[in-house]
Amino acid sequence: MSQALWQTEPGADPDKAIMEFLAGDDIVDDRFLLPFDIQATRAHVRGLQRIGILGEQECEQLCGLLDELLADFQSGKFALDDRFEDGHSAIEFYLTERAGPVGEKVHTGRSRNDQVLVATRLFLKDALGRLADETRNIALACLARAEKEGDTPMPGYTHLQRAVPSCVGTWMGGFAESFADSLDFARAVSGLIDNNPLGTAAGYGVNLPLDREGVTAELGFARLQLSPLSTQNSRGKFEIMALQAASHALSDVRRLAWDLSLFTSSEFGFVSLPDRYITGSSIMPNKRNPDVVELLRARLAVVDGAIHEIQSVLSLPSGYHRDLQFTKAPMIRGMRSALQALAIVPDLVRAMTFNAERMRAAITPEMFTTDDAIAAAAEGKPFRSAYRDVKGGAAEAQPRNPEDSLVARVSAGASGDLRLAELRRRLA
Ligand code: ARG
Image (cartoon, rainbow, N blue to C red; front, side):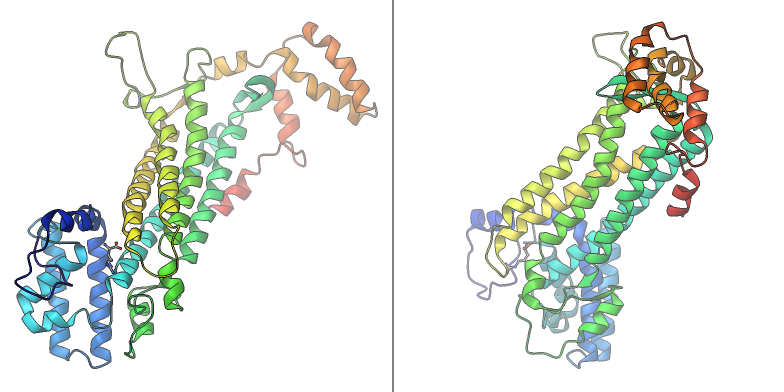
């Protein structure tokens, strides 16, 4: 490892094991943050120029080198490896190696504490934007199935027992609305964390008139994060909020995956998945396993585990503590694995096929008794007595047409009306 930023005596021989322990997995985690760190460093450099700390040429030189660093990093020419303590040191090393004393000016008025905060904040904003896009895509895919095949009858279950006649529109439209809620939640969190922590330094500000507003505008933040101390204390808290947004979307995915693992089983046989979603067994030649669906169901555990991991780190007094380094890995792991899982779902929803015969056959005569009791009650019979009357006769009930029940429920003004047009407007 090259000399750490805070080591001033060239002759000092730091303990290798301790230095590695301090760095932890930073160089690996910081690979996901480096482009954002470079972006924020560029804005910081421009801000320093505006207040006279850097000359115009110095500023241009550093910005040019930052562009080169980004390109070198993305092409693999510059590796964030164990030569460095972390990504922040790597940036300063790169600039200083090429621009000497000008490079040594870059850290004026900032601390790695606000540097990691701003890189993290930009990472989270980007991840939340993508979370919103993925969640909306899933909602739209579910809505399209509901609009196209909404009338296809399907049994409705409670307690996993057959309950009342229902339809694909209710099942898929239900998911469309749930994902729309998760979308709104992701957008709300995105708005909440959209403030700029850079310029708060180590958590107590600095004795320089930093152009915080200008840096905020250049980085595209909606506003400034004001108090230096609360800014520092938001580290981890904002990460948890973002992960919670991912968790809501993934709990909808978990429920959908659960339904699919039941509905694709031969016991139900309501839904078939194309071959690309199916795996075989290494021992049982007959098996067609829905492994993709099961891994989608399990993905929430990664995100909820990450939330718990960060919460455990946050038992801290005010201000920066090195413990906070341990919030990075779960944040990155949680957001990346959520996004990877969500990206699979729209195609899955579009590609699954319904077995209308099997679903119709599972709507058995006794499932109409609720309709019958309510119809009698609508004609004036007290509901409880109508309920008793139909209950005894259920076994003798004749096969019935589920469409009749559905038409009554989705007709204008009835509470089963699917209101898909309203949902589409909400997702516009
Ligand atoms: N890797 C550190 C972290 O993630 C960077 C900040 C180090 N700051 C310090 N004062 N030691 O928290």
